[in-house]
Amino acid sequence: MKKIEGQMADVIKEIISEGDSVVEIEGRKYYLTLTEKPETTVAEDVEADPELKQKLLQAKMDIFNGKTYTTDEVGEMIDQGEL
Image (cartoon, rainbow, N blue to C red; front, side):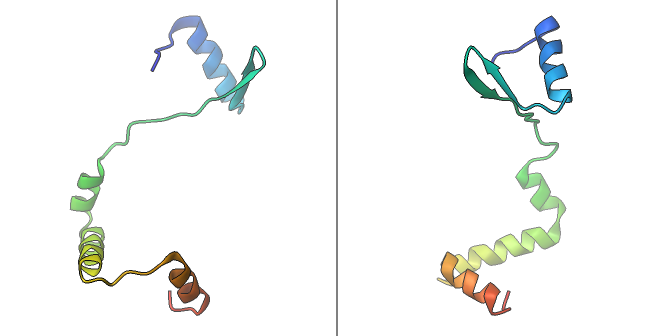
């Protein structure tokens, strides 16, 4: 990662604030995206949400017990209104 500061950073901020996410430099296109560090980790989210923790534990037990489904099976269950 390269840290950009000063005038160059101001130019890039202006481009992003105008809603442009693609810039062309010397005939090559570059995509600009904002990536931020999440406020919490997945582990913290799971510990803070008992329902999520229970769902993940149940999913782990289902996998351990061989209760798994293919993508096609899940799609079919959705189509049939089972999910």
